[in-house]
Length: 237
Ligand SMILES: Nc1ncnc2c1ncn2[C@@H]1O[C@H](COP(=O)(O)OP(=O)(O)OP(=O)(O)O)[C@@H](O)[C@H]1O
Ligand SMILES: [Mg+2]
Image (cartoon, rainbow, N blue to C red; front, side, top):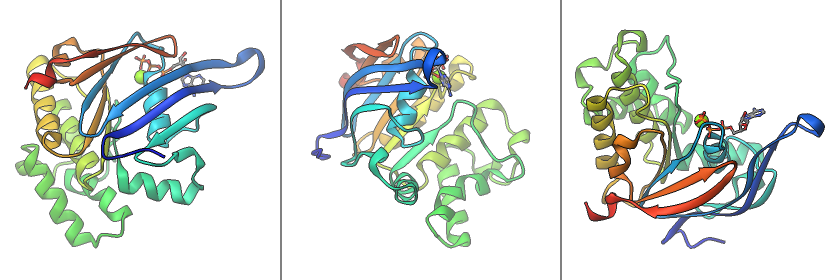
């Protein structure tokens, strides 16, 4: 078992195979990685190298094939389905690349979902959702539907939703890829500000060299493996 005081995630020999036989794809080929509690780790590498697969396994969204996995003191794959859903609801915030907002719900209703899942009463959930939207500078858009928001605003709603239940581990898949430089920087500023100084750990998958400066460390992946881990500029902030 992990010492979560210093290490949020510890992975060794992690593999993930999709499909069987001739059609099998080995998306993760033996990942070894440690993510420290409270750090911002960026995960970079060419398209198809396994970044989304890795964070999906870490977040308990996908099962691993082999290897040792310890995320906040547990192996999510070893939990029963109900326990895993509860564990994820309590501990993980996930920002999907495509935002995944519910189109028929307002910004505030979207952000309240993780709280409703945790049985927070609706009025309280909406109050906290609005407060979180205020922190991402969307106080005036809480009642807007996703289709009425710009890409950068939708991305900030997705971030608010990932953080509203105060998860210990926040995982973001390409959070700035759809954004222009200024908005992308702003979104990272918000993410960074909301996690800095806390014990919240942040893993950000990105192709976007413009935001590397926010990273404490940068893990480079290639063909299903982590091939290098470098210290980023985030350490000197
Ligand atoms: N559900 C799936 N079934 C079969 N193969 C898959 C599945 N999901 C991903 N793969 C394959 O696994 C490999 C890793 O995919 P993954 O989505 O993790 O890459 P990525 O690094 O996130 O790429 P990108 O930067 O393009 O998002 C790819 O070869 C992909 O085709
Ligand atoms: Mg991906």
